[in-house]
Amino acid sequence: MSVVKFYKEDQQVPLEMHKVRVVQKLFLPTVEERVKCLKEAGNNTFLLQNKDVFMDMLTDSGVNAMSDNQVAASMQADDSYAGSETCNRLMKALETVFGTKYFLPAHQGRACENILAETFVKQGDVIPMNFHFTTTKAHITRMGGRVEELVTKEGLDPHYIHPFKGNFDIPRLKKLIEEVGADHIPFVRIEAGTNLIGGQPLSMENMLEVAQICRENGILSVLDASLLQDNLYFIKTREEAAKDMTIAEIMRKIADAMDLIYFSSRKLGFSRGGAIVSNNNDLIMRMKEYIPLYEGFLTYGGMEVRSMEAMAVGLLETLDEEIINQGPLFIEYLVKELDEYGVPMVKPAGGLGAHINASEFLPHIPHEQYPAGALATALYIAGGIRGMERGSISEQRNPDGSEHYAELELLRLACPRRVFTLSQIKYCADRVKWLYDNRELIGGLKWEEEPKVLRFFFGRLQPLSDWQDRLAAKFREDFGDSL
Image (tube, rainbow, N blue to C red; front, side, top):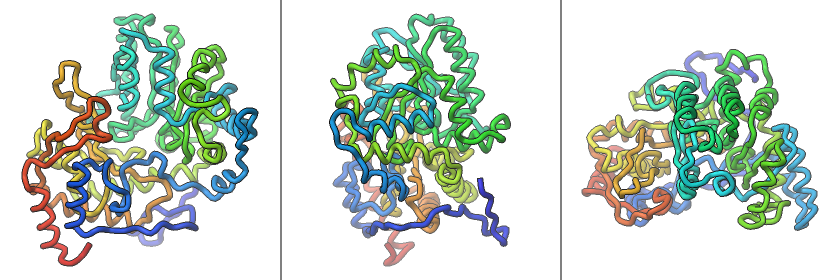
C-alpha cells in the first residue's frame, strides 16, 4: 500500500486515494425539526426518512460509492433470462477472486442465509460461530437450530487491545464438538469481521485453524465473507504471516480452506445482491433447487443484471489495497478523535464503522431502557446523524418472552466507503463530543410497538420523559442559530 506522510506531524489524516466526480446535495434540518422527525419515526433510526438525514451512518450495506469502472460495466448488462453473458462474467470474477467453480446467485446475503438454513439446519442442531448476526440467527432458530457464540473473551471487552478480537476460541470450539457431537453440527459459521461486536476481524491463522478442525470432524466450514474486505486489510497490516502476501494471495489462502462461502455484495463488492460459492458441486446441488423457488432463475437469482455487472468489477477491485484501505483508515481516524476526547469507544478500531460503548457513555441508563437505542436518537438530535443501535434492541426475546440483553450495548457509526469527506467525519466527531459533555440529559426508551421478529428494523419506541426536548433546548443554548 502507498504511504503518504504529511510534512507537519500533527496534521496526519487519512488521504483519499480517489476523486469525487458525482455529488448528492445534503440537507440538515434544524434541531427542532430533528426532534419532530424522530418522534414521527418512533425513535427508530431505521424509520427516519433519508431526506431528513444529514450524515447517514446507519450502515455500509448498499450505500458505498461505486467506482467509475463499476458504473461503466453496468451499461453492458445482458438482460437475457437464460444463458446470460452477465452471469458468465460474474462467474469468471468469482473464480478469479475466490478460486471457486460453482456459484448460486441470491438477491442479498440474508437470502443466502435462508438457503443455507433450509438445506442444512434441522431441529436440535447446533451451529457454532464466532459471533452471530441478527438475520443469521433468526434463520437458524426458525429451523429449530441453536447458535453457539465462541468468540474469544477479548472480543467482548471494548477496552482490550488485540489485533484480532473476532477470533474463535479454539479450545471452546473443540469442547463443543466433543459435547454435542459432530452429527448435530451441520456447519461452523465463520464471520470475517464481527458485525455486532465492533467490526472486529479474525486472523488468517484462526480462520484456517477453524477450517482444519471442521475437516477433522467431518463438519462443513462456512465463511460469511460480507465484511471480508476490511478483514483482509487487517490481516495484511496486523498479521506477521501475511505481511509479504498480496491481498489476492490472502483471499485465496482463506477461500481454499472453506467448504462454502457466501456474502452480501451490498458490502463486499459495493453493489447489490449476494452469492454462495464453492468448489464442492455436491453441496451446490443440494442448495440449487431453492434458488428458483425463493430467488429467481439460476442466471440472476433475484439480482438486477446491472448490479451483477457492477458486482463483478467490485469484487476484482476488492483485491486492490488502495481501495480496501479507505474504510478502515477513516474509521480509525474517527475512533482516535473520540477516544482522545474521552468518549468510550470499542478499540482497536475495526471495520464497518466506529462503535461507541453506550453502556459507558450512558451509565445511568439501565439495560431495560436500551442505552444504545437512546444514544442513537440523541445523536440524531445533536447533528442529524443517523447511526445504528447494536445492542439489546437488535436482539430477539427469549422463548419465554423475557428480554435477552446484548453482550455489548453499542452505537455503530458506519463509514460507507468513499462517501464522506474528512470534514464530515470531523463534524460527526464534534457532535458526539458535545453529546458526551451533555450525556446526563439523555434518558431511556420503552417499546410502543414491538414486532416479534427483527424488531429493530421497524419497531417503534418512545422516550421515558421529555429528555429529548430538553436536549434540543440545550443544543439551541450552546449553538445559537446554527444547524
